[in-house]
Image (cartoon, rainbow, N blue to C red; front, top):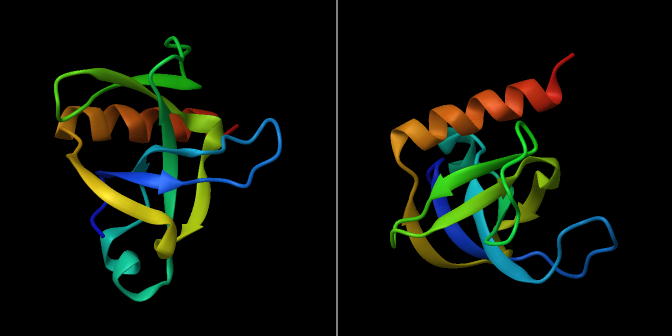
Length: 107
């Protein structure tokens, strides 16, 4: 499981305001750690969310469409929740995602 890979992920069951259902999500945990742990950390994606820096960030999808990374939705998931691979993020989007996560999580 490489960092920056986009998967369909089963996020349910969830309670509001958590994001549920099966949706695309980006693996953001370290690739080396992902090899040994049974879980990964992901940021869910939505096609409906507008850009709201640093909470929602536009991401170019491998198919050419745009989705939005929902930064407050960061969560750890068991690898068994990962389904089909949708592709990898572009390097510029990984850098922008890292910056948004840093702004969101730090004082």
